[in-house]
Length: 345
Ligand code: TRP
Image: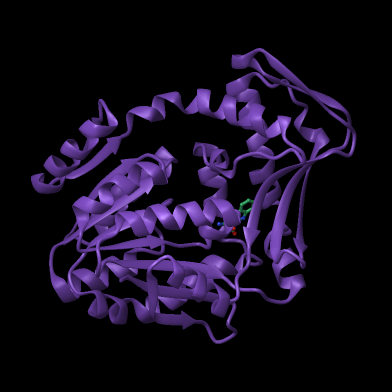
């Protein structure tokens, strides 16, 4: 059975987590700051619209509708990332778990944990009872994962954390020896500065000898990249538009959604896909809770998300600078995607 608990403070969370971890039950914990999600969304939208170029924080793409749409993106034929990463994971799960030995398995941005099943099964097979700690801001996807994983693999106990990556960093110290998963090339959704502070927090929280499994999308032919973010069925377009729909739902933004287009294109100089919401007519965008209003011009584009693409040698060097050494580097035959097993030294 899945128990639910609401943490009262971020510090209290650590105590609750320890109790949960030792209780032997499946549990889902909700961070107190999740109550402030709408306020954070309002603040973030207002700050992003005041910046130039205007930009939005990709974290807010993942409300329950966004989580559902993202699951559907992962099944689109053009979106090779999920399929390719899953295949590498399936082929290498046993080798990874042999290398790490018995560990607590944390996952940042776990979504519905679709790719993790193989790894958890391999860990349970090799090392016996396994503790899995998925962390996500999307409550729906997390709840699904907390139900589905133990049903598939009875040796796996789940403690879900409904919270942000920052919430999860606090757990690093208490879960060692641990393997933290960060899959789906989500690291590419952070710009260089954000990624740098992410790695500082990660490396700072990990104990020597802890492991980190990183999935990264690699630089490749532009057409393949552009297709992956412009699927023919229009699911990615719906995903982008949902961020504006969420503004209507939660911030009373008053937007006409059919006058906002999804535009995703590869920027070869910066080696990243940039996803924009393009306004085909002038509109005013209200941020209700803050009593603010922004005028968006015709043809103006608001940056919704970046997806950086990586080259392995510079990436490995960057990680090494943060004290993370690649013990194993796996790719697929076409070298489209990389899965790196890193160790904190
Ligand atoms: N981590 C995924 C990626 O970079 C997220 C993603 C997939 C995404 N498709 C998207 C984000 C479209 C915004 C828009 O590929």
